[in-house]
Length: 75
Image 1 (cartoon, helix red, strand yellow):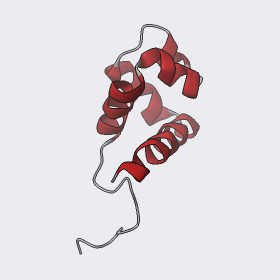
Image 2 (cartoon, helix red, strand yellow):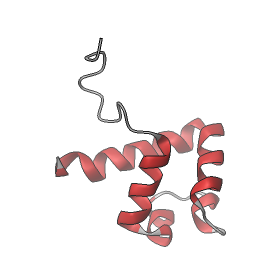
Image 3 (cartoon, helix red, strand yellow):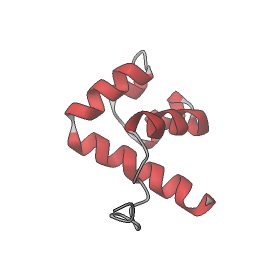
Image 4 (cartoon, helix red, strand yellow):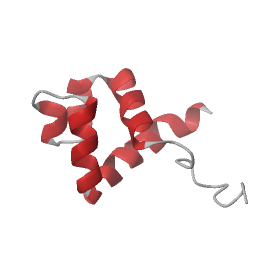
């Protein structure tokens, strides 16, 4: 059953890994420019961002879509 989601680019990638990779790539300020949410603007941290994103589906979707659009062409 290891082929349940072969076309899902986020399969096996944790939300924490997504946030860390985006922060490494963009930095907090440019990430806040890309996705206008306060957890990226005001005293940002991975921990606070994860807490917010886990409770806010629309924001999580935006973060996941940015991750896919940024890194899918680099594979």
